[in-house]
Structures are given as structure tokens and as C-alpha cells.
Amino acid sequence: MLNEYISANNLRKTQERYTILRQICKFPSQFTADQLSTLCAQELTVSRATIYNSLQLFLDSGIIVAHPLYAGSKVTAYELAIRKNNIINFQCTKCGRVVAFENKAIDTAIRGYRYSNFVPANYSVYVFGECKVCRRKPKTK
Ligand SMILES: [Zn+2]
Image (cartoon, rainbow, N blue to C red):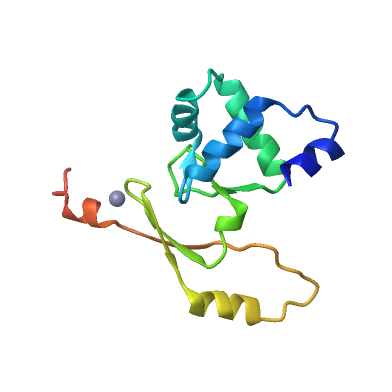
């Protein structure tokens, strides 16, 4: 997919891009640019600009998707597009932690529905609330 996209858009096939994509595949679910940067630093020297440029390239080519994060956060979470289906994301509005679960019933409901004038490719399901860790924390004023 990346090869086709890069060829179609006359982009250079750089070793860096493949290394970055390989690192992205290591994340079981969502990741931030910071987390990706840290992981990549173990294998190659790569600037933050390269990380962001590559993320944009992967977004444009549909390899990854960007997740809308909870209100008040300026951080974007990314995820491999192929990992996205069948998943419900439970996102903590306090700390931003995301726990993902598979849910066949919701997947069947979304896929089984006939949409007029629309062909769905991917979908995201978010449930916002408070995680176990934040619930345990004593409330501070
Ligand atoms: Zn939390």
C-alpha cells in the first residue's frame, strides 16, 4: 500500500519511511507522535519534522488514521487503519488513556446497516468516561 502510494505520487522511497512504518506496526493500538519518536530513536536518528511528515504521508495514503481526542487535549493519537474495525475505544476524559475492546455486536450492527448514498470504509466508536486509575484518585480542588 505504501509502495503504491509512493509510486503514484512520485515520492521518494526512503529507508526512514519504512523504518517509521515498521515502528508504527509495533503499537497494538493508538500512539502519539511522541511515543513514535521515542520508539524510532532506538533504531535511527530521525528528526521530529520527519516523524510528522511521515505521519502526514501515512494519513494521506490511508495507512493510518488520526483520532479525535478528548476536549482540552492538543495531542493527536494515530492508529493503523487496519486495526480500527471491530473496536470500541473507551477513552478517559481525565488522563486520555484509551482502552480498546472488540465488540462483534456493534460491528455487525454497523456493517449490516444499509446506508443510502454512502459506502463506509472504516469506523470508530468512542465511549468517553473516567478510567479506573482516575476514579481511584482522591478528588483535588
Ligand atoms: Zn484516566
